Image (cartoon, rainbow, N blue to C red; front, side, top):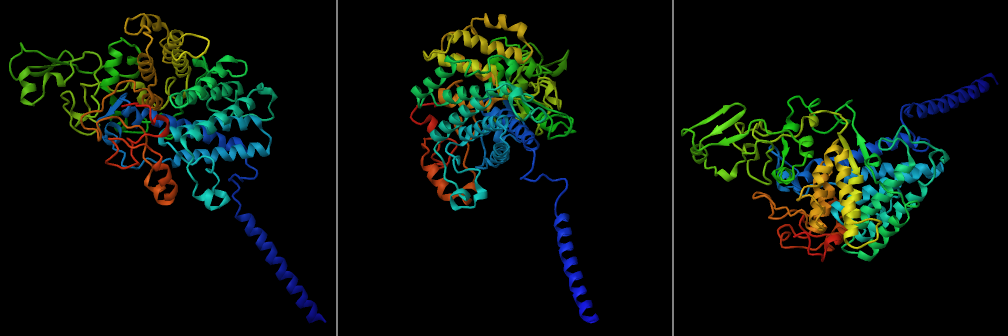
Length: 552
């Protein structure tokens, strides 16, 4: 009996230890510092969504698309920036990564009945999917972000047509407008700590939603003019129901911190000891000359004056090449000895930009330094503020009062009912841009210049919108595609003789989702400039510009 009891006690002790150890192991495998998807506060993820979205928009408009649109040129590692040599490596994984996190916040907000979070995430969803279809064309949309369902359809999603994506975005932004229509105090949740754009103000998010609607209606106005007209007129016809961004104080922007490289303005010199990234980005001649011709004071905010201007003087003795009084004096024979024509250099005493798509940008304008990211004193560098990790003007600009007013000016030119004339909105757009860059006191004299006064043309309007899109050049690229303005010419060493109109579908996507990519590529319109690549070309036209004869 004693032996039997000992055996029973032993088994009980063994079972107790087994279950206790199992529970301990389970508890040990729970990360006390991690966020459980089932219980996580949406704000913990929302802050990452917003900062990554802001950085992605800026990185386009300040980097390679700024090169395409000839705001800047690089004098080091310049192939993608100056020559569109993208090597079919354009990836959208970062954008979809933002959207997946955004979807998590939305789903949690639905579970918690947080309508403020739902509205904000729908705005971000619209902006990011808008960016994807703007850049590539057809893309996964209705079946995207559903990989956890683990079905063939969601693992290898079909591509929605570009038209359906734009229509879907507009519908979702309409829902966002409704969700964001209440005063801040009426919501059962707050995003103040997470919201790096608007500090939790739903009224400003609502303006952003409706302003994005204006952007996408205008984007498709050449393809669906009646639909776009009705959409824009509905918004402008009911400002109480559809408030929009009308002054720079409501701009959707994101400031930067100097905590780390990742949280700071890109290419700053605090986290780049030899300033290589800052040095390699220079002003482009196209933008510089467009602004110099109009005495545009924004140029001095964005660029440094040339440090040492060139002066070619035929009265100088042969062989003269000297720096004196802050200028470099050259006799004409010095140029001839280097096979440089007089028209191939710039003698501007104020600002000098690098011409687009040239060979050896680092040696332009008699640079004494032929290295990549040259210390070239004879061209304009970006203003010193762009050396800094943070600053009052160093912001990602997602959508602005300037852009909105330019959209309304264009709508008015089309004869649409938008509550004002094209000239009024054109002037407001430029005023908003000057205010943004701290130059509100200079705008009146600028607007009175003969070559700035509104002349009633889309050409002038889009050229001014292009100038105002500094650091947000992706928007000017999308305008260029549908209007052909500004009339930019590709440089002599770009890989095609005209500007590109989309990004390539990346190799990884073609390998993993081949059948659906092939269908999407079949819907692109090939051109004379895309024959070398085949259908998946940066010079094949997506739906939004097919049949328009634009931009070239």
